Length: 151
Image 1 (cartoon, helix red, strand yellow):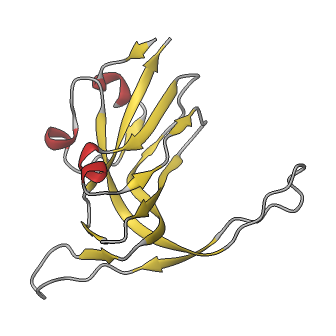
Image 2 (tube, one colour):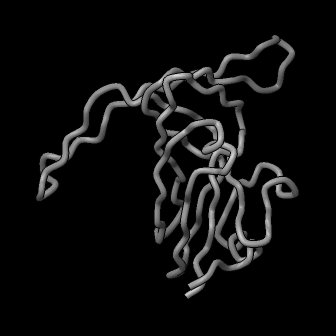
């Protein structure tokens, strides 16, 4: 199995912020729109009847200067979920892989990888953990990478 070219990903991906920066040979970088702190425990059970998602609190980005177009999230150690600007439309049986961007990993962030095979207008999110030293993330930062698997 290998990855399809990024042009194939664009058949399914909407709301790309800046294609020239985000597009690479076999993947598309995806960008952060909102960040939520995970604040209360969720619940899992075998059958799903007692499932409850973890509670979340939206964090507002802070601008360094009033004239700035974009703000920053100054995150302390903890667990978070990023909602991404981009979203997937019907994958028509294709399978996508979403993982942390190389720069996010190098900034000390640990996060999940997701296998996606959804139907229509799937919101992209990624859960991540910020290290003890913290991390600053700017609005629209490339936080994750999306690949399309070739079967």
